[in-house]
Length: 314
Image 1 (cartoon, rainbow, N blue to C red):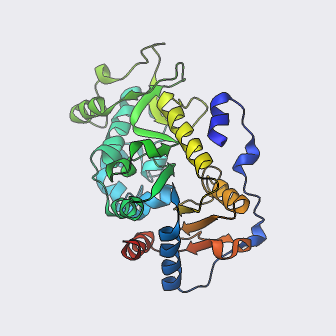
Image 2: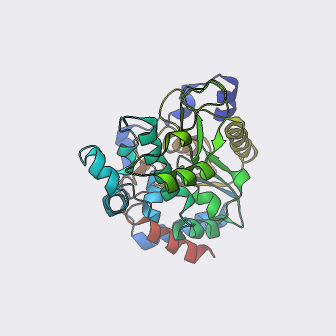
């Protein structure tokens, strides 16, 4: 019930810790085919599936924040502000833009490029195929809307870290966010030399101050009513299925921000004998050895693994 406690302002941070000593983590040596077969069987036998998706899932799907995808599509920004700072789309978001016209010149393009103008990608559509006939829920730190686009029920998704398509008061003066697609498209059409016209710069409708992307990066992040409703639905899902056979399907969650998905998933498996963990991660597919057969850690190409699991589940 972690997120209901957050809503009420009573947070026990022990709920976010897994209690796994580093010495318990192991890279499993089972053959890839055996791991895929076991993962598919666990999913087929489960009463429900809880998906936990981090940045690695969207990277595996093709939404890379760096490399050619960044340099080819953001060349004007790299040239204007310098490649030393503009190394990828994530780092570029923290650039100290000299004006609001410059800031929104970048963010309008980034939001359109990474959310609004992207179709549902194959990895997410295949993932939906795997769970669509099961009771499921999605917990994700991703902000690109791929789960929504792939067909997942919007009432079964909790995106904890925000949304590329929403803006908020920079100082969080009121608990509301604003859909920004129409504004971003106007900005994109009017942008020249990386800048948008001053008349398109958004202002907070309450305090008159600056607006910001609704992305969790500081203490002013706005958790609006929709955020809290999603948190409550997630807490309800956990409560309703606590005694059932649950598969925790974790995708691309590393150790940069493990306290939202990775550590809580391990804690749930440790505390519930009917839970099992399937962890897909390019480089960090270590799982607690003490979980025995209730944990599967599959490294390498996540897109291939999901395709292979789908082929056995359907």
